[in-house]
Image (cartoon, rainbow, N blue to C red; front, side, top):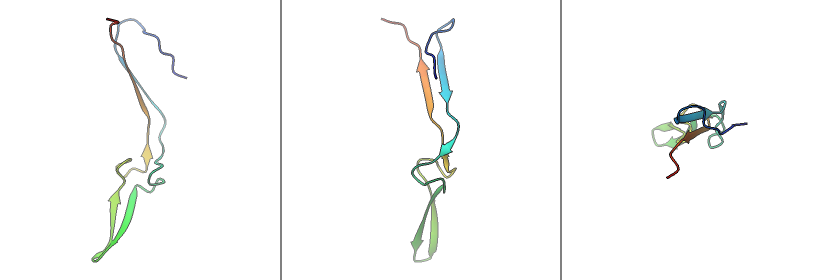
Length: 65
């Protein structure tokens, strides 16, 4: 649970989840494609080849103008 309350001075806060298996490549880190010269591995665009993703939530406190 994230509690959103300003604590002292106004600042930017960030919360990150634990790593999760990338849903796009199913944790494989990318995709294999057959070409005329043989198979080629392309990194997943979502996890950039790591096989994992994390969620980053950023809170940027601003004046109420």
